Amino acid sequence: RRAGHGPAMALQRELFRTVDEVGRAAEREGIDCHWHKGGTLQLATSPVQLRRLHARIEQAGRVGLGAADLRLLGPADAARRIAVPGLLGAVFSPHCAAVDPARLVRGLARAVERGGASIYESTPVTRIRPGAADTPAGRVRAEVVVRATEGYTPTLPGSHRTVVPLYSLMIATEPLPAAAWERIGWSGRETVAAGGHLFVYAQRTRDGRVAFGGRGAPYHFGSRVRPGYDRHDRVHRALRDALAELLPAAADARLTHRWGGPLGVARDWSASVGLDRAGGLAWAGGYVGDGVAAANLAGRTLAELVTGGDGELARLPWVQHRSRRWEPEPLRWLGINGALLLAGSADAAERRTGRPARLRGRLLALVIRE
Image (cartoon, rainbow, N blue to C red; front, side, top):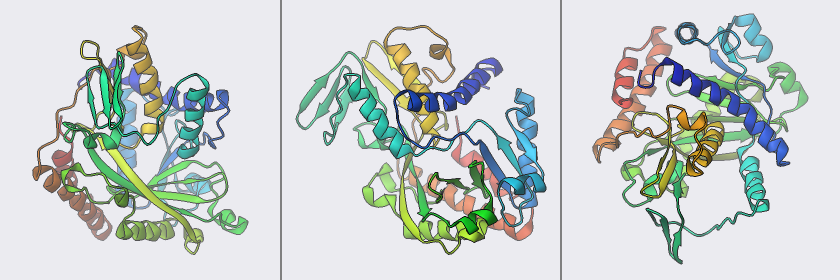
């Protein structure tokens, strides 16, 4: 609605292409990040979820996405891809790849150092200002300072209402035996999303593990970000239960890892890239969990903006978009955690009644505002 149909679809198509660009960049730089383009599945295990998948396909058709972008799979076709109890159908899109993001970021760091850049770790930036970044050891000056701090942005002075850090947590199993994979299938290694409003997501790793994540961790007052928030016993137990329900063949697998981290969420849930040339500041972020691909596109767009280019990337509608600031505390804490409670209540109500939760509309109105 804000940008118009043509520009919005241009951004969507560029994001689709960026999935392949991440793979090309990894190959070009010799980064073994386990990139595998198997597409993605959104699963439906209840009639309510299936109706939402049908609505998603209809909406996609209205904006110009066809079967080559999204298609609905019936129960049998969906089960041939992954064996999930009670699976009623799925939406498949080819525009997704699995990746080990830690391997990717380490490989990218080595690549930029080979190109002549310097990376200074253990050097916190305590403040950014036009043309300068302050650190405990002194001030770094540059023609343009880029803020690309995503969920950690609230730790910078004056930025605690720019984005909120919403935590997403994950677990990983030990490598599953061949017999378990015979029961599960999943040979295409599609990424998977399932569940309701507090959805879960998963991938089959190259070494045969299930990496399984989800939302539901509380928002911390004042947009605080702490290493201790990367783990939350209640949420990690819930993820284990959800994994056992979705993939019973993995229910008894030993968990070898659990972790998490903050997503950067702008007030209108819109990612953005921009440059204030006069002020010497640029920014990128607000990816809401889709940053592996979106950050690649944002980086290439920033390069074009900073070097004065005027190509197609600089004209995409997320360029120079500014989201309004989040509400001050305690409204922010009350609203976000209230929305998380509503989401959990909506999921429970739908499981109990088999009907769409009326809370859904209230949830969207509460959280997503322009």
